[in-house]
Image (cartoon, rainbow, N blue to C red; front, side, top):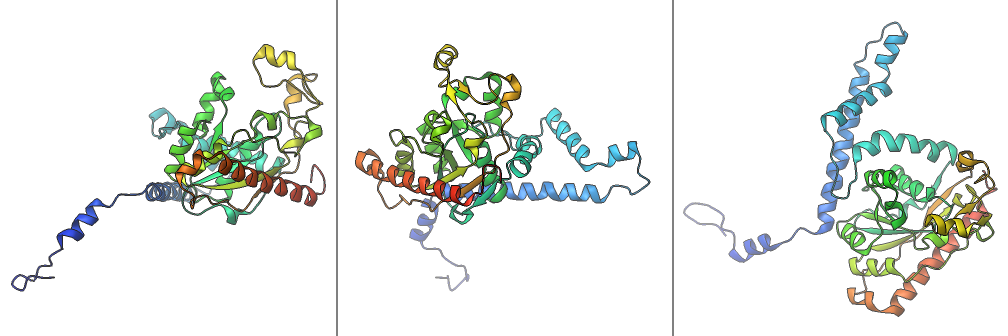
Length: 344
């Protein structure tokens, strides 16, 4: 309504109170953060293109080539930012500048050239809201977790960086744990997973744990037990959909022929692998084989229609976990049939 003398618009008190009482949801906060991150990446790319366009075009030479190479100039800018402290680390330890300029370019060589990762089912990754990505685990060393994070980062750049949950063993390794934090990996605990999902993030988990990554080569692509369904409880509490992901190719990078249990106990490891190259060849045995990889995102399992109280129902947790496991096993078998051999 409006005052007939002044022409001013009068806002009803109840409407104003409802507007002030409205709370910003976690999904809205995450969407705004993703928009800011995408804008920052685009601005950075625009500056790089502009700098390359301004480079002089003279007679090439060793000095000119060193100064004009955009890759060297990018390295120089990165070093300058690190020395001046012009970079941001979030509350979980993720360093976007380090990932974009150091980790990702190095790992993309493995992703695109060495293992030639083929990604399927990108339409099953939700465009909004949180998601719990649930994948099979294999390969002696967790290269499958790295490639899964790269697949989401490279193929769906509009999404936030996936946060991979890692077991306690990683955090006992002094230097590796520090760099894992920088790459966006976090502790595999329910509290961190729930907090990330409530903020609208994509969280990656491997329910098989060490049972999957340390199984012998004779049991390749046979899913191990999923534990007690902790990932299902987290999804029920947060309303996040569960996206099963089948990874084919990681089983062949280190064919595990045996497990030296006494040495594993001596060093406090879940297993001590014996592969065709390790430990006989020493460090050379740690070089992975160039197998052909296929990563497929399956149809998401929706749990938002269930109440949070369902997280305490053992039968509900069992049925959802069993459904995810069956879907994941079917994805693995289908891609194994389509792949011509281990290496192409």
